[in-house]
Length: 422
Length: 197
Image (cartoon, rainbow over all chains, first blue to last red; front, side):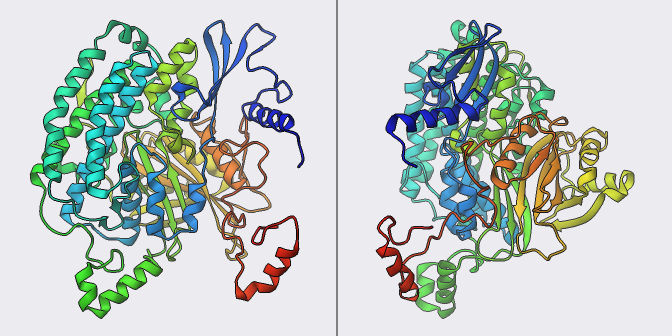
């Protein structure tokens, strides 16, 4: 279609307006005064507080939000379609890129689902390392939330401190996998490789230094009167609403529901570790804040226990139809060579079946619904993204609050738009 | 943490097969509603009739022995090559019961000609977005939804990408076996070789 630049621009804008139920013709200005005196205001997608590309259309009465309509899909990449044309092991790197702040947790969810279809168990050492790595990832993800959500409310120092601590965890990622963020370290059947010497010391350093850092954060923020004023009683979602919207993770627990998949339906042997599930009482921004702050400390408890009990042994399944044989075996055994060739060229073939396997990611219930038709590619893979459901609860949380509070509320549900849009 | 209780979490025993609580209840109270049962990886999938979907989900949500109160996901699976007597789409619902710590998968089958399912928006506030996503990507129509429109894709997008006949990958590449096609394409001034029609 031939259009001049100006016409093309207008068309894009009109399309965006139509997507959120606005008049597509009225594209000249962002804010429109409606007949009843309220104003429609466009917020995002490039707003600094939207953590990526989230667009909100707000109906305002003065500064009070009467209605909030999120417009999502700016980061939609069609991962679920791509999964269908890739073999199972080729899908693993895609999972990193969905919730890009919790890559290991995404890898883990996918690996567990496929392992369930295959009916295999991973070795003990892999299981313990998976627990350590997913808890480190949870802490790293919560640190970003802590820094950015405080910054949304005008406090810039916590951001710098949180980034300092997160860096230590990214260094561990880089040390073990060579990559800081999209590690793809947790694989179907175990891990990419065993952790190198020095890993334990690095994690121990995290355990030694982080509690002091958390104390520092709490000193800065938790009892800060401005922060408390901005968060207490803001963005309340009741227990009933939180459940009906399908909220999960700290956003659900902040409303007082002690549901954590690590406790409720343990995977990776979480039942062996002693830890608490912090819950809130009022379901406001402050409660969700307290939950996440406490969760980071609980994660450290789990890491500490796992590190002390970390067994020796292999880190990938011995099932040669699932994980490739070690190099020295390929040199000496014809069968291993064949297995290796088959795995690289074809991949694994889980039997026919379906599974819905969910884990507790940093944001809530991350589930993979996989339909296998017996071939080497998933017939269908639906990702149940926690951020998607959590964001669906945003309109009900923002109703009746100020625009400035909307910013605080978005921060408190800790969405990642890559996870929302997939 | 003044006033913020820290609990040990819920440690209810996980039932042997996920979803058996829902199956037992439905067998007892609405035996005709279950068309098929499938078990895979210790998880139950209940295929129910479209006309009874709302009643079934309402019962599972409200009955004191079930309380499947959290909507986990809605999606669909496309089987274009299924046996002719079976409908093309499986619309999949997953519900979680927080009090009983159980998950159930409910499937409703719809045909390509009549891809309609009643909306569950009135039962769960969170269904709104899930149903819109399934409409967007599969073209399943949720009857009674207050505002059924695309959610992830732009509003003027054509087609439903997660249907199996929507090809988004694997455009033809010039090889010896399709040399005629490649030469023909190369002569057309407005397209590059390998570009789809």
